[in-house]
Length: 142
Image (cartoon, rainbow, N blue to C red; front, side, top):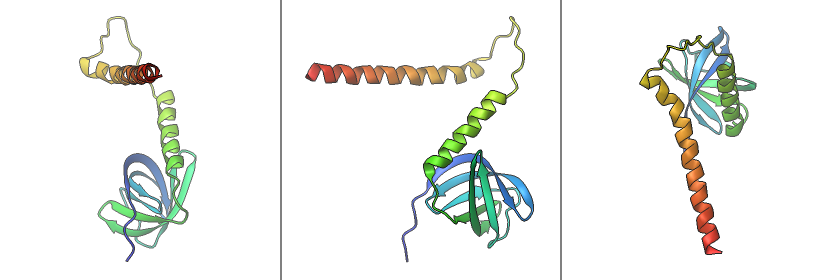
């Protein structure tokens, strides 16, 4: 018996086409030859499906179903980087087209909503500090 392929846990919204048409699904884990999905109405084992995320299309066969969870064996080897790029394309597109409520001068964001805008700055600052520290150590040793 062959060892089980390693899986990567992900949460990627996508669309799946089967005999019943298109439906929204969530990709929950991926491996080189398959993936696990959450779907509102999973197709039966043996059904061929197409999973789409942005510009990426993956074709495979449903091999197992448990409740709303299903496993798909892909026809071609999964390119992890291509899937992650497609996931980022979809996320970036949703941010560009997301409706933004009109703000007034008296509107003050709640602390919870401000927290989401601080995190990227904190991460960027931490990255700059670490890079500066590494550069300083490298220069000091020269």
